[in-house]
Image (cartoon, rainbow, N blue to C red):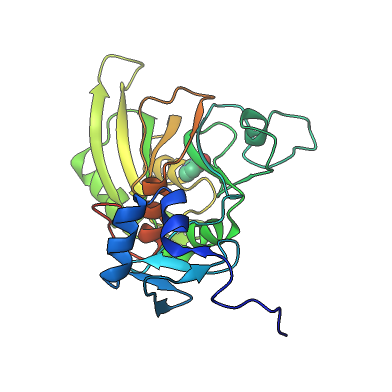
Length: 258
Ligand code: URA
Protein backbone atom coordinates (compact mmCIF):
# COMPACT_ATOMS: atom_id res chain seq x y z
CA UNK A 1 0.00 0.00 0.00
CA UNK A 2 1.35 3.43 -0.82
CA UNK A 3 0.73 6.35 1.51
CA UNK A 4 2.36 9.06 -0.54
CA UNK A 5 5.15 9.43 2.02
CA UNK A 6 8.52 10.20 0.41
CA UNK A 7 11.94 11.03 1.77
CA UNK A 8 11.54 14.68 0.78
CA UNK A 9 8.59 15.04 3.18
CA UNK A 10 9.03 15.37 6.86
CA UNK A 11 11.54 17.08 9.07
CA UNK A 12 15.27 17.43 8.79
CA UNK A 13 17.01 14.52 10.44
CA UNK A 14 19.36 16.68 12.53
CA UNK A 15 16.37 18.58 13.93
CA UNK A 16 14.65 15.33 14.92
CA UNK A 17 17.85 14.01 16.51
CA UNK A 18 18.28 17.23 18.49
CA UNK A 19 14.68 17.16 19.67
CA UNK A 20 15.12 13.55 20.78
CA UNK A 21 17.71 14.89 23.21
CA UNK A 22 20.52 13.05 21.49
CA UNK A 23 22.81 15.93 20.63
CA UNK A 24 22.79 19.55 19.49
CA UNK A 25 21.83 20.08 15.83
CA UNK A 26 25.45 20.78 15.03
CA UNK A 27 26.62 17.56 16.68
CA UNK A 28 23.75 15.67 15.05
CA UNK A 29 25.00 16.88 11.66
CA UNK A 30 28.45 15.59 12.52
CA UNK A 31 26.98 12.21 13.45
CA UNK A 32 25.17 12.06 10.10
CA UNK A 33 28.31 13.03 8.17
CA UNK A 34 30.27 10.41 10.10
CA UNK A 35 27.83 7.76 8.82
CA UNK A 36 26.70 6.80 12.32
CA UNK A 37 22.99 7.43 11.74
CA UNK A 38 20.75 4.98 9.92
CA UNK A 39 17.16 5.57 8.84
CA UNK A 40 15.14 2.43 8.21
CA UNK A 41 18.39 0.48 8.11
CA UNK A 42 20.21 2.69 5.61
CA UNK A 43 23.06 5.07 6.35
CA UNK A 44 21.60 8.58 6.24
CA UNK A 45 23.11 11.50 4.40
CA UNK A 46 22.91 15.18 5.32
CA UNK A 47 19.69 16.69 4.02
CA UNK A 48 17.68 13.56 4.76
CA UNK A 49 14.14 14.21 5.97
CA UNK A 50 12.22 11.84 8.19
CA UNK A 51 8.83 11.24 9.71
CA UNK A 52 9.65 10.87 13.42
CA UNK A 53 6.49 8.88 14.13
CA UNK A 54 7.18 6.31 11.42
CA UNK A 55 10.82 6.09 10.46
CA UNK A 56 13.23 3.98 12.47
CA UNK A 57 16.29 6.00 13.33
CA UNK A 58 19.43 4.51 14.84
CA UNK A 59 22.73 5.83 16.12
CA UNK A 60 25.49 3.23 16.09
CA UNK A 61 22.86 0.52 15.65
CA UNK A 62 20.82 1.56 18.69
CA UNK A 63 17.37 3.06 18.27
CA UNK A 64 16.84 6.79 18.73
CA UNK A 65 13.44 7.46 20.26
CA UNK A 66 12.19 10.19 17.92
CA UNK A 67 8.48 9.71 18.59
CA UNK A 68 7.65 12.49 21.02
CA UNK A 69 4.49 10.72 22.20
CA UNK A 70 6.59 8.05 23.94
CA UNK A 71 7.28 8.39 27.66
CA UNK A 72 9.51 6.33 29.93
CA UNK A 73 9.33 6.56 33.71
CA UNK A 74 11.45 4.99 36.41
CA UNK A 75 9.41 4.30 39.54
CA UNK A 76 10.50 3.05 42.93
CA UNK A 77 7.58 0.73 43.62
CA UNK A 78 6.58 0.63 47.27
CA UNK A 79 5.66 -2.59 49.03
CA UNK A 80 1.93 -3.38 48.80
CA UNK A 81 1.42 -1.89 45.34
CA UNK A 82 0.47 -4.11 42.40
CA UNK A 83 2.54 -3.87 39.22
CA UNK A 84 -0.48 -4.65 37.04
CA UNK A 85 -2.51 -1.85 35.44
CA UNK A 86 -5.66 -2.67 37.37
CA UNK A 87 -6.51 -4.93 40.26
CA UNK A 88 -9.88 -6.64 40.63
CA UNK A 89 -9.41 -6.55 44.41
CA UNK A 90 -8.96 -2.78 44.33
CA UNK A 91 -5.40 -2.71 45.63
CA UNK A 92 -3.23 0.25 44.63
CA UNK A 93 -1.32 -0.13 41.35
CA UNK A 94 1.87 1.34 39.95
CA UNK A 95 0.06 3.24 37.20
CA UNK A 96 -1.71 5.29 39.87
CA UNK A 97 1.68 6.63 40.99
CA UNK A 98 2.62 8.24 37.65
CA UNK A 99 0.77 10.69 35.34
CA UNK A 100 -2.48 9.26 33.99
CA UNK A 101 -1.87 10.55 30.45
CA UNK A 102 -0.46 9.20 28.27
CA UNK A 103 -1.42 5.77 29.54
CA UNK A 104 1.55 3.63 30.44
CA UNK A 105 2.10 0.05 31.54
CA UNK A 106 4.81 -1.58 33.60
CA UNK A 107 7.64 -3.45 31.96
CA UNK A 108 7.59 -6.78 33.75
CA UNK A 109 6.35 -7.36 37.25
CA UNK A 110 7.47 -7.13 40.82
CA UNK A 111 5.63 -9.07 43.51
CA UNK A 112 3.15 -7.19 45.67
CA UNK A 113 5.65 -7.35 48.55
CA UNK A 114 8.71 -6.46 46.49
CA UNK A 115 9.98 -2.90 46.34
CA UNK A 116 12.24 -1.14 43.94
CA UNK A 117 12.80 -0.06 40.40
CA UNK A 118 10.28 -0.66 37.67
CA UNK A 119 9.97 0.99 34.26
CA UNK A 120 6.59 2.32 33.12
CA UNK A 121 6.16 3.27 29.49
CA UNK A 122 3.92 3.39 26.44
CA UNK A 123 6.88 2.30 24.31
CA UNK A 124 5.78 -1.16 23.21
CA UNK A 125 8.96 -1.85 21.28
CA UNK A 126 11.27 -1.29 24.25
CA UNK A 127 8.92 -3.14 26.59
CA UNK A 128 8.80 -6.12 24.27
CA UNK A 129 12.57 -6.28 24.00
CA UNK A 130 13.12 -5.87 27.73
CA UNK A 131 10.64 -8.60 28.58
CA UNK A 132 11.91 -11.05 26.00
CA UNK A 133 13.93 -13.68 27.89
CA UNK A 134 16.49 -14.01 25.09
CA UNK A 135 17.59 -10.40 25.60
CA UNK A 136 18.58 -11.21 29.17
CA UNK A 137 18.96 -7.74 30.65
CA UNK A 138 20.36 -8.11 34.15
CA UNK A 139 18.19 -7.31 37.13
CA UNK A 140 19.83 -6.81 40.49
CA UNK A 141 18.01 -7.40 43.77
CA UNK A 142 18.95 -6.83 47.38
CA UNK A 143 17.39 -9.58 49.45
CA UNK A 144 17.30 -9.24 53.19
CA UNK A 145 17.25 -12.85 54.32
CA UNK A 146 16.88 -14.75 57.54
CA UNK A 147 20.28 -16.05 58.67
CA UNK A 148 23.70 -15.59 57.13
CA UNK A 149 24.44 -17.82 54.10
CA UNK A 150 27.77 -19.64 54.15
CA UNK A 151 30.16 -19.38 51.20
CA UNK A 152 28.96 -22.85 50.11
CA UNK A 153 25.33 -21.68 50.13
CA UNK A 154 26.22 -18.56 48.15
CA UNK A 155 27.91 -20.86 45.62
CA UNK A 156 24.73 -22.95 45.32
CA UNK A 157 22.74 -19.80 44.62
CA UNK A 158 25.29 -18.81 41.96
CA UNK A 159 25.49 -22.16 40.26
CA UNK A 160 21.81 -23.07 40.21
CA UNK A 161 19.13 -24.07 42.65
CA UNK A 162 16.58 -26.80 42.00
CA UNK A 163 13.10 -25.22 42.03
CA UNK A 164 9.80 -26.88 41.18
CA UNK A 165 9.97 -25.38 37.67
CA UNK A 166 13.57 -26.48 37.08
CA UNK A 167 17.10 -25.50 37.99
CA UNK A 168 17.94 -21.80 37.96
CA UNK A 169 20.47 -20.39 35.50
CA UNK A 170 23.85 -19.20 36.79
CA UNK A 171 23.48 -15.98 38.77
CA UNK A 172 25.82 -13.47 40.34
CA UNK A 173 25.40 -13.55 44.11
CA UNK A 174 27.33 -11.82 46.87
CA UNK A 175 26.92 -11.14 50.55
CA UNK A 176 26.55 -7.38 50.99
CA UNK A 177 26.00 -7.10 54.72
CA UNK A 178 25.31 -9.25 57.74
CA UNK A 179 23.69 -8.51 61.08
CA UNK A 180 24.56 -11.54 63.21
CA UNK A 181 22.71 -9.99 66.17
CA UNK A 182 19.22 -9.62 64.75
CA UNK A 183 16.81 -12.53 65.27
CA UNK A 184 17.83 -16.03 66.37
CA UNK A 185 20.02 -16.70 63.34
CA UNK A 186 20.81 -13.12 62.48
CA UNK A 187 20.04 -11.74 59.07
CA UNK A 188 21.93 -10.58 56.04
CA UNK A 189 21.63 -8.76 52.77
CA UNK A 190 22.43 -10.75 49.67
CA UNK A 191 22.76 -9.15 46.24
CA UNK A 192 21.35 -11.39 43.51
CA UNK A 193 21.80 -10.57 39.82
CA UNK A 194 19.55 -12.52 37.48
CA UNK A 195 19.09 -12.72 33.74
CA UNK A 196 15.93 -14.78 34.04
CA UNK A 197 12.70 -13.59 35.58
CA UNK A 198 10.63 -16.48 36.82
CA UNK A 199 7.79 -15.91 39.20
CA UNK A 200 9.04 -15.08 42.71
CA UNK A 201 12.43 -16.33 41.65
CA UNK A 202 14.65 -14.63 44.23
CA UNK A 203 12.28 -15.53 47.06
CA UNK A 204 12.11 -19.15 45.94
CA UNK A 205 15.88 -19.43 45.43
CA UNK A 206 16.68 -18.07 48.87
CA UNK A 207 13.99 -20.17 50.57
CA UNK A 208 15.29 -23.28 48.78
CA UNK A 209 18.71 -22.84 50.38
CA UNK A 210 17.24 -22.21 53.83
CA UNK A 211 17.28 -18.40 53.96
CA UNK A 212 13.75 -17.07 53.52
CA UNK A 213 13.51 -13.50 52.20
CA UNK A 214 12.20 -10.91 54.63
CA UNK A 215 12.51 -7.93 52.34
CA UNK A 216 13.24 -7.72 48.63
CA UNK A 217 14.27 -4.63 46.69
CA UNK A 218 15.14 -4.37 42.99
CA UNK A 219 18.05 -1.93 42.77
CA UNK A 220 19.04 -2.15 39.10
CA UNK A 221 17.55 -2.91 35.69
CA UNK A 222 20.43 -3.37 33.24
CA UNK A 223 22.29 -0.05 33.23
CA UNK A 224 19.58 1.77 35.23
CA UNK A 225 19.96 2.36 38.97
CA UNK A 226 18.92 5.25 41.20
CA UNK A 227 19.38 5.29 44.95
CA UNK A 228 17.84 8.74 45.30
CA UNK A 229 14.26 7.70 44.43
CA UNK A 230 12.29 7.01 47.58
CA UNK A 231 9.44 4.45 47.52
CA UNK A 232 6.54 5.92 45.52
CA UNK A 233 8.74 8.44 43.70
CA UNK A 234 9.27 8.39 39.96
CA UNK A 235 11.17 10.38 37.36
CA UNK A 236 11.42 10.31 33.57
CA UNK A 237 14.30 8.29 32.16
CA UNK A 238 16.75 10.49 30.29
CA UNK A 239 17.39 10.04 26.57
CA UNK A 240 20.76 8.52 27.45
CA UNK A 241 19.14 6.06 29.86
CA UNK A 242 16.54 4.93 27.31
CA UNK A 243 19.36 4.41 24.80
CA UNK A 244 21.40 2.51 27.36
CA UNK A 245 18.41 0.23 28.08
CA UNK A 246 17.80 -0.29 24.37
CA UNK A 247 21.48 -1.09 23.90
CA UNK A 248 21.40 -3.54 26.82
CA UNK A 249 18.64 -5.51 25.10
CA UNK A 250 21.09 -5.93 22.22
CA UNK A 251 23.91 -6.97 24.55
CA UNK A 252 25.68 -3.64 24.02
CA UNK A 253 27.11 -1.27 26.60
CA UNK A 254 27.00 2.43 25.73
CA UNK A 255 29.61 4.72 27.16
CA UNK A 256 28.27 7.92 25.72
CA UNK A 257 25.16 9.16 23.97
CA UNK A 258 26.86 9.88 20.71
N1 URA B 1 12.10 -12.22 42.46
C1 URA B 1 11.11 -12.30 43.37
O1 URA B 1 11.09 -13.24 44.15
N2 URA B 1 10.17 -11.35 43.38
C2 URA B 1 10.19 -10.28 42.54
O2 URA B 1 9.30 -9.44 42.61
C3 URA B 1 11.21 -10.22 41.60
C4 URA B 1 12.16 -11.19 41.58
